[in-house]
Image (cartoon, rainbow, N blue to C red):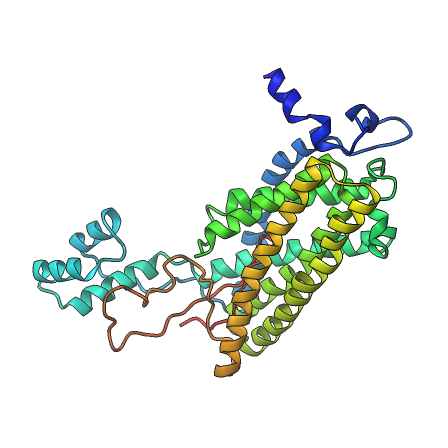
Length: 386
């Protein structure tokens, strides 16, 4: 075990040439990031999750009820033991052959069986109230972190000159404000990892999970090898779009369609400018080119930049979704559907069997986020509940 730890914390991997861990030990005169500081993120993530439960129940829910958001979910399917057994034990999306077999067994029309399975899948959807509370929590937390980040960064020299991220690197001292910013943001992403399995499940669940892992890895990497200055720029840049996307979702759930459309347009512009323009031209430029010139590459430098490139790849994917929604909105006159559904069974009408002629149009809601990564962010749109 000791050998594995020595191998993992190899100075030649984590630190620039001629720098050792002993050089970055805390003294009375200077404080540097220490890997053990990151252990604080796990219990703090649990605290954030508990705060979220309190917030959703005692703050978000009363706000939702004041806005007359319904707590009831979709209409329940009539009880049928045979269909329920198929649904729970075999498949939630029966193929044409199975539908015909069930039709003969129950003496039901195939379309009625299709309707039953659709209603049964919808029955598992969370209510609009639940969705609103989740979005309000993420909106509030992201707004707080973005506000804190802006207030902190506007006093720093590296906000205005990114080369300051690398001068005297890695002997840049860790301030209390910077330490707080990092640990709280890292704890939030750990809390998202835990809560993602309990939150509304969306079609892009694997991508969002990958996004959260990438975010945690980036924050951890940049903290351990003291790339915290550029790390603060990355975190603050991502928070602004996350705030807007959750605000648009809240407007959608409140049935404020015009406000939802307006917020979505603003969000789309901010997302594309921040993540397809500012991020590569500002962040990647300094982490790849300016740091190469001032510090020079070393193994963990390569890993850090690979993670940033992975994040940029996710940005491109979500930008594609956003542009797709925008094009549809222009053609229809409003943002009408989300290509990233709230839950995996949202596109219920998109069954592999023939559709009923009188089937209602799909109701798909939800916007972040990466998100959010996680979180950053996930492309989305506003729709009214049917």
